[in-house]
Image 1 (cartoon, rainbow over the protein chains, first blue to last red):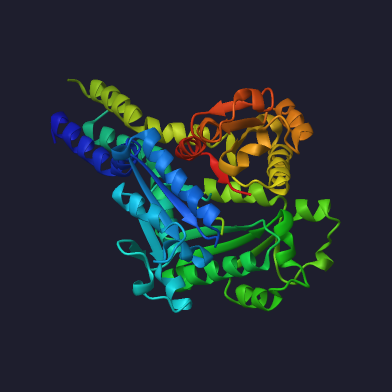
Image 2 (image 1 turned 135 degrees about the horizontal axis):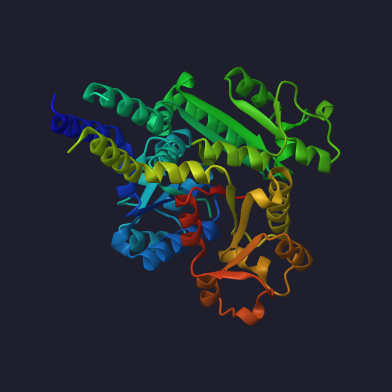
Length: 142
Length: 142
Length: 142
């Protein structure tokens, strides 16, 4: 093999090996945060919604992904008759992810018909939050 | 040095430099979560135990490490007379780590004789949780 | 190009590409933790201060950076008339960062004159906590 061939081969090998590092560096450009709601407390729900809005205002709405994950006693936040229902519409309008834990729904005999229209669902809230942390998202528990 | 010797040397050097990246990639296969209990509230203790169980059920018991760390006012969760004592036995059976903060124990004149039998101990709950986060574990505060 | 030139070029390229990995490894030597206070609850404030002190005692005061960030209903912790005011002086003496959220201050018509003297300020508490997590700091929510 000629030296020039070595050079090309090694650069390709290095690029392949370094792809996880490059991916991390790219991720760092855009920010991400998952906000957990696990309390049955409308004051906490409002705080979570304030946090989401402030993050968008501070970083720029198109520069940050924001998700609110409600599970356990926090599920009530995302029900159709939630005390913060008017703010849920605003949050969805602002592309804030609102995610209900289907595990909690099964355990509490709650159906999608009971939930606020337009929200998203995850199989297990905690597992989703773990996944986001592994992907490099920040975690906020108001 | 011959080109072939270069090739070998550089590959070895790259492998040595990249070992942290490889370690991160290997870690990604197995999941890990540390769950914090710092409230003196049996509802929170049950929620933490539910979270631990759901994570195991969702990801597969042998594919995820789960630890519950109790400190501060949360220490009562892991005492012998805890209101969730029957569930502690189940958790230990399922290989869920139950860890009491010895710092809190010293400050509250609590001895191991006061604690639920079979649990584990860490010198300082918060420092243990920091260590787990540095090791790449997800952090959940129910 | 001579083989020796290749060698040098490739090592430089590898060093450049690997700098994020090296930075991570260096960071691992020193520890960092950001502690969130978002409850209007003096018991939680004391717990946060205990956590900060214990982390310093356990790891060595000069080996760990500790910040307490107060936002939302937790802002009261850092006011001049805070119920934990005497402990705030001690914390500042021990180089524990005490940071108030100016976003919360604006929303609650609170001025710096209302706050405990000597504390620091961040524009948005949640965004600061996200930044710290991206920088590799552990996150504790007592």
